[in-house]
Image 1 (cartoon, rainbow, N blue to C red):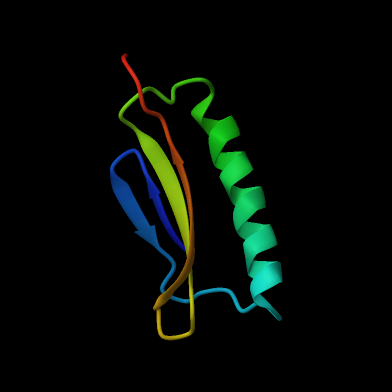
Image 2 (tube, rainbow, N blue to C red; image 1 turned 180 degrees about the vertical axis):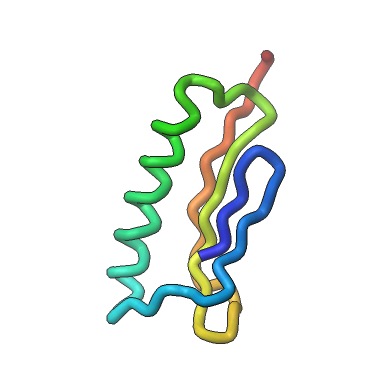
Length: 72
């Protein structure tokens, strides 16, 4: 996964191998929920976070984005 949060990008150079894209997607959605909990109400308009599922060559396969739009 490649994770973007609070303007920073976190790469996992070793990666995690999943049996299927569905398994990777399930893990990404769980991780996104945990990121939202960790933000503890501090997600404000103009910010967001994302988790990108990548293949073994670090090419993007799916992207889960959480963004906030609207006035502050």
